[in-house]
Length: 245
Image (cartoon, rainbow, N blue to C red):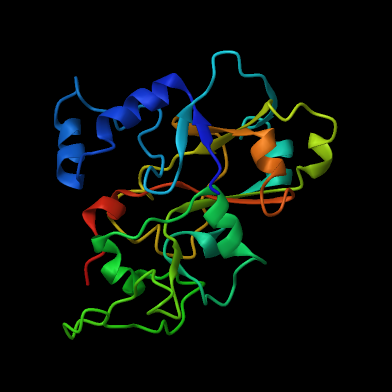
């Protein structure tokens, strides 16, 4: 089962425009200020992995995790350098049950452009991935197919880690929501790899552009670990451009 991630109506409007566009069509929108969506809510959400729905109009948000409240945010939220970008199942520095947790919140859907992803592994979590040649075309690739591959691609987005919520949720209505706001760094999330594919920290301070996800408490309680959430929440422009080597 995959959790539903709720977003604002404004973010859903953006998603509805770009969700079926390829990289070139999407970035071409920014050529015209009247169609430019790069600063619109929802633009950077990882629609390849998230099961998105519009936040109900009567939704009650009881916890807000936002960079504007630095003390609370830094207590519960991290955007770890070692989980950013391409992560395979055998990576040496993964949290306990990472694959299970990420699959509940944001399972990766493998596409053709992931064939070269092995060459762009996270620099803090890289290893010798077992490649296979499932179609016999002498083009060894990794595939997310348990029948063929020992190693599989778990995530390739900007992963947001949320911990320590269990006590805060005690006694709350399961239909209430937790708001999780994520700062956006357009420079690091572009097609250039220098920042994203590095050990550089991702800032969790307030930013001019931010994305907000709403997590239903019932979904948190049903998750593999109430005290440990991992969401591949934000994509980079590199995703749709494709991993080339």
